[in-house]
Length: 242
Image 1 (cartoon, rainbow, N blue to C red):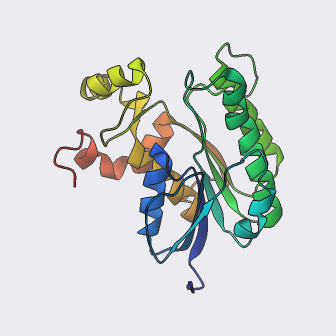
Image 2: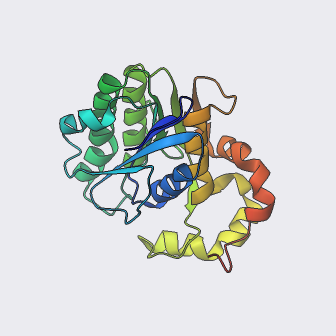
């Protein structure tokens, strides 16, 4: 049985097997301020930890069965998503908009005081006028989350997310960006963010607030400002990372 101290938080992470979500999970498990982490995903993350409650869920179009797992939670980090071009447009919209709204609806009902961190994206367009489907869908999801009335809602809009650890890139543009990352970051520092730093910011803000307003949209520049104390020793690609 997991017993938390009175000041410890209970955190839910959705998409804990993805690039950002996996970093969020590992970081959260190491934080003394977090007493319980519920990781919700379609497949197991392969981590065993006394703080971890892993919940496997296949149909994010219907999250009603997650209500017991989502009760008595203090915060949530939502990292579920898909790359443009990796799935048909109708599926991209379902994952980006419908799954987000459905999960948030059940969380809001089960834990009305929970704070929410949402992984959106650069150029997300709440007006719906963008020619980019991804931007329209992320904007639509942001609007829907705002309408649900979370007491604390944090929208994160990263630009290029650097994977840090080697992986199979989803398409040519990501392979190209990874190859030129050191130069691109030197020239355009506010257009990149490390995946682990992004994850840390999403967890820290939703759990501790970090002195920011109750609800806020963080563009890439703002995310970098949150994690800036770590940047000098973490700017370079991870060589010899254990």
